Image (cartoon, rainbow, N blue to C red; front, side, top):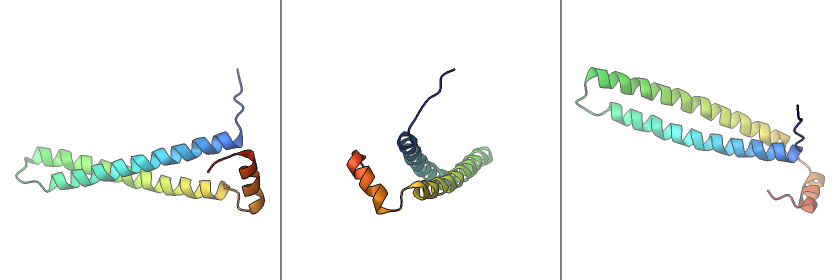
Length: 99
């Protein structure tokens, strides 16, 4: 069994990338929710198609809300992990770490 040794900087970078990916998913789900909502307004439509669109709209809305909450929660957690004083900023600049 091998142990993966990763620095805090590598973990933070991966967390930031995951947060960005979650933001992208949030945007796509919101657009899908809007599309389903607009499709529900189309007339005439069979009751079967309407029910399927309604299910899709509810699923997209739930996923968008869940993703939005997670995006905000993870964003706050990442902000709380960031160094908050000048000493750490100087160390990052001297080590060549780019924001």
